[in-house]
Amino acid sequence: MLSTEQIPDWAADPRTRAGRVAARFRERFASEPELWARAPGRVDLMGSHTDYNLGFVLTLPLSRDTWIAARRRDGRTVRVYSMNLDAEDEFRLDAIDRISGSTWCNYVRGVAATLQNEGFELTGCDAAIHGTVPLESGLSSSAALESAVATMFAGLGDWNLTAERKALLCQKAENEFVGVKCGILDQYSSCLGREGCALLLDCRDLSTRAVCIAAGIRIVVCNTMSRRRLSGSEYAQRRAECEQAAALLGVSALRDVTPEMLAAGRHELPERVARRAEFIVAESARAESLARALTAGDRPAVAQLCAESFAGARDLYEICSPAMSAMMDAMLAAPGVIGARQAGAGFGGCMVALVDAARTDAFRAAVRDAYYDSTQVHAEIYPVEAASGAAVFDIAEIGK
Image 1 (cartoon, one colour):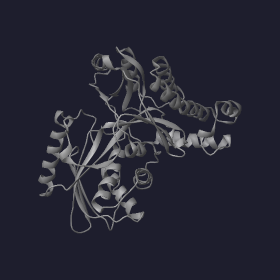
Image 2 (tube, rainbow, N blue to C red):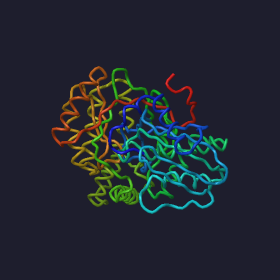
Image 3 (tube, rainbow, N blue to C red):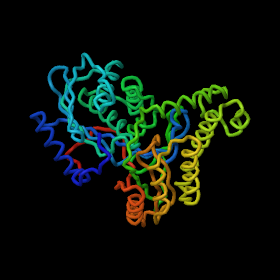
Image 4 (cartoon, rainbow, N blue to C red):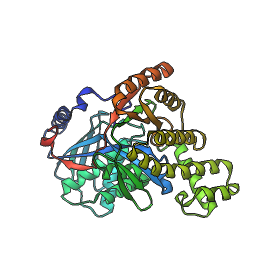
């Protein structure tokens, strides 16, 4: 719900942000919001493209999030307004159609349609949306929007929806209504986040383990300001290649393939498909290894795992872009860096660095300068914290 441009200063202060959103709601709908919902974005610390292969992902739900201020209205009409895009949409719950093309409206409509198809009773409403998750950057702005919308409808309808089911229904909305065949990672991270820790997600059985990050290590997001689009043909092609590899190796998903199995059966695979499989098998194992290394504060292991992940993303999975390579060079040359790698699906967007906390400011300044010197683009570099999952919240408690 946001452009790749930096968010305004007022959005960084929760109380100021709440005041701005409430004021815009009054301006658009001539009433006061009665319910507030929020859902976080996420950055994967390790596990690119492993989710739809049913492997492991180490994910960090972010303090950057999407807010919705809402109020019930008579009838079956839903009116939504995006502050970030200065755009609006209106639809009836009795006839929810998909809008042609890629648009934020379909994420809202898709969640509404999916919830109704599952038997939940929805009510008409007015809603104002504001996000601090950059659009098309690899931080799951779409999942944050979907999760916040589902949370809003549940709150307005006064019915319960478990976090696990909410994640699955939001994924279904994106897969079937929006038309993006994503895995469960983004929605699960947004719905089941835990404040203060990363999550090691098993994408087969959807179990999670909280992962504490050792003191002195800070997570820093580095936005290349180069947009990526998950619905693009490259993403679909990678997924198809993984499915082909699994079928040729005789398993249901690459999660079931060991390095030994891949080595023994590699001659059965087309070379490109074999490279994709090699990356996924190693990447899933790296997610578990990085969880252990971060908890132990094993900085050399963190550095090695991140380097191996980026090399595999570049050479085996081929999801890197010139902007990502330039950012990687800038991150690795900056003071305080422990490890750095891609984030999200690749093809541009954000990257992530693990940094010595005491040198965070120096790292940010150095990366900004080096990236600008290389690309003439002003990058957005900011530390992030782990946030709790999607929920209704009390606006009166914001900032206290």
